[in-house]
Length: 102
Image (tube, rainbow, N blue to C red):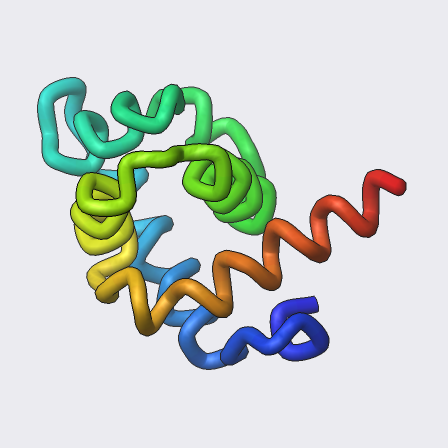
């Protein structure tokens, strides 16, 4: 789905691995937990989802988040990537998710 929507599979795979690590190690006041709360999500709830579902949930929340400067910080905290490098992969997840719902 990522490649069909212009995303980079390697970037998405790397992000998924990093996200799994961040979620597994997230404490209530960790940078990961704080970043997730800023977009209305909870690390403990995301740990209950499959890794792909968690990534899609975060991609949707980021898609709806309007503070671009803070959004860049959140992407960096969660995925270890700058927003510019990860933007296409996120967009692919959101587009793919919306197509699947239709």
